[in-house]
Image 1: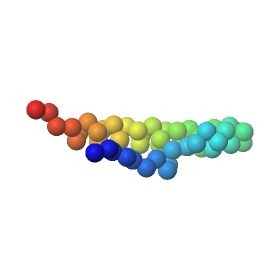
Image 2 (image 1 turned 135 degrees about the vertical axis):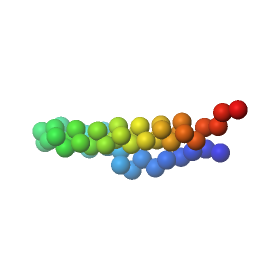
Image 3 (image 1 turned 120 degrees about the vertical axis):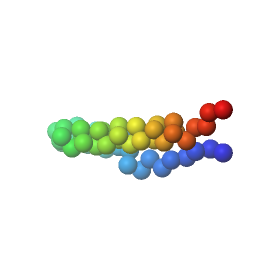
Image 4 (image 1 turned 60 degrees about the vertical axis):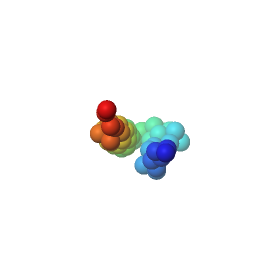
Length: 53
């Protein structure tokens, strides 16, 4: 059974480019930090659902 997670909130390279082009570093930082927290949540879910025998 495969585990698929939707990653619609992940920033695309194009979106990051627009943030950099507009000089909007604070908003870019917020987006990247949120993506990092989401990655940590996914990793934590994977670890907590594993079964050890």
